[in-house]
Image (tube, one colour):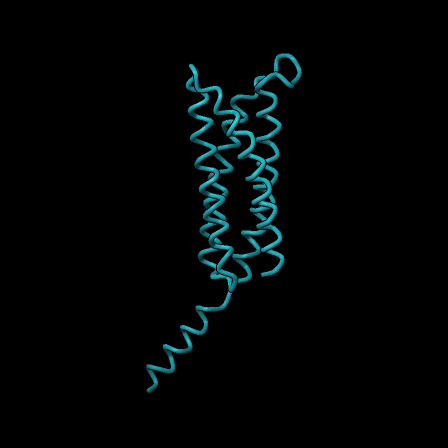
Length: 143
């Protein structure tokens, strides 16, 4: 009997949302939004909308790499936090998926050749990523 009560107590504790992890994920989400905006600015700069002599290709690539790592970190934090709203996990998985697709499209565009048309997918997907990240911010507030 005592063992069953202990098991019930542990399972009840495991179902509670870890507020500290959710706060950390929320703060990283803010940083991720800034990285998405910096991706937009450096991406536009790469196609000529910048001052002469600014090489923004490396900056665009590094912010993409860091953004992908941030999205993965947010996903891990949300899974570990066990939020009451299961949609948070799905939204975090979707964010990581979009970063992976964006990263792949960017790498394919850098190969040169006839793949520059992928920018027509890359740019609108970036807008969707920003919208998705903004919607995640609203979900954090409801947690």
